[in-house]
Length: 235
Image (tube, rainbow, N blue to C red; front, top):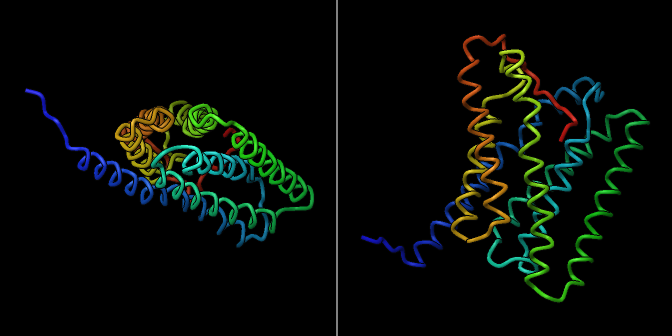
């Protein structure tokens, strides 16, 4: 017996998955807040790196552009979540620059200009592609590569957890948010028949599961959990 689902039901399920992804994304967007509380309290960026926020901004901008109607069909929820993400990253970068020393300020401002320059090239270049399908493939491949690299960045932390047998530097709620976000958009991509969304988020789902399994496996043998999240520049 073959079960068929009405197109209206599929559309509803897709929207539900996309809205859930937008909600779960806030767990990732607000995760650096403890770090910036420390930066503001100490009036210094100390040894923290600003590179993850710059990279996250570029990632959000590329994927946001992919979600616009000019590039892909019916991916507004992809555009909204990445628009919000880009706004958060800009706030974090602004705070980082405000409290950084002169050398870091110059470096961060230079990287920020480079991000906007790269994004502008992608936008202008894609708009010069007349064929809509080729335009979607071009931006989709860039978005897919950016998302996979973002989801793969915790591999350093996963390796650290296995080596130290401690979840000190892998906050539970950050791992949970990553899993829920990627799973939601994996389903969204499947329901929208969009490989540029479900492939990278499928990778993110698998890595999210690995992080959660490791967390519960090593939780009992872990040292006291760090109050400040580890910020690394391997992204």
